[in-house]
Image (tube, rainbow, N blue to C red; front, side):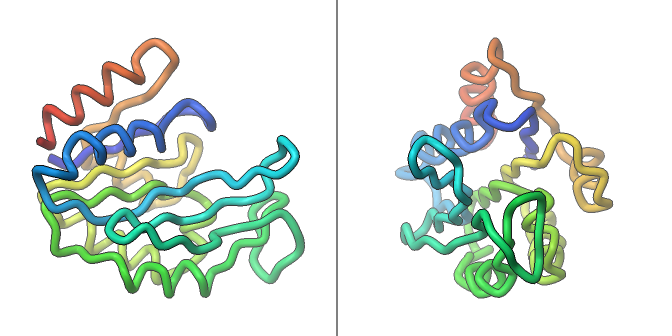
Length: 164
């Protein structure tokens, strides 16, 4: 089962991924990563990637200047590329949070996702406004859930049932 979760920023896409991970981690081999917000003084200052296999973290983006930018964030392309080298596609379930504008700044991520899309069981989050060809392909080929305040808990339970 190939599943994509989308919805507006802050709606709970990462939370759904973590609920699925927590429910299934003792039953099947899960690999992949989540992207978590980093806050300081109540403001979001960036994003870190968290490897679900070993807990290691790497900066994806921070507020500030940089060679590659998405909005107010400098994207650390080299960090993302080296981080991906430690994501094992030999697993029962791959979780990728997120396929979005920052991640799509590197060809290595796009190549990673081309390989990942071939897996039998994969859960990805996708940026809800993205028109990138890869996101469009995922939306076409995967079962897509659109999260809102009313359905996000129920959807997490449904995904656990489908992937478990």
